[in-house]
Length: 311
Image (cartoon, rainbow, N blue to C red; front, side, top):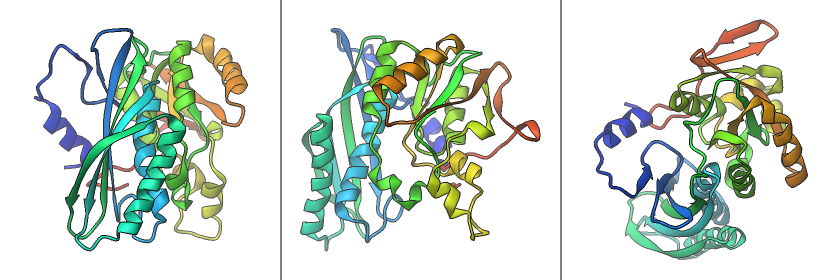
């Protein structure tokens, strides 16, 4: 049983109430507590040996732990408010290292206006675990879900993809301003962040929206790291495959109506000139994900990272 099969089984009969607008299955839960803003809730965890190594600089561990949650807030078009930190520590933990991890958390929290309001510490044998629960808000009716894509939409992705293992998975900046702008502009129909690989994460949008997509291979933005890692290493992924499947890019993938594509590109360039934005394909009525390259249009079944299964 892989990660998504387990989640589906555990959440198929969870209780709900009248405050729940969006429950399990999207980047964040959405609650309506009255007023002109709705509440976003998200929890995420990083584990030593899975998301970072024992010799990773502690400040970078803290940054990544909080940035992952903030990326989910960004994917909903929201604004972060507060976070709670749970630390699972081995009995022989290094207190100086833990303080430096918190320094990394605090630095990013300060830059993004996120208050750290509490949490929990507990013993976790053998390795370090950090779990963060985050709260955010979004204007009523503006939350960008995975389920809003429409046939004919253009598919966009921010930044560049692939090769995150070379350091970007620890140092990325969540696209909070970009996500909020897309939500307020009204252009985007559906959005999520690319955490487990473009091919896998885009499929979540397609499944939630009941549509398919065609991607242009030559349009997919590939990082220099993904291009260089394949040179001289026959075991490395080809650059395009790395961009589609590596994961932990934490960029935004979203869809907009085709008639709004130029306005989105122009508005993005004016607001975020240092962040690349690329149209990589279109939404289709035919289900599934297909790739158009020099050999024509073909289906492909590669995906991203899935816990309990791997790549």
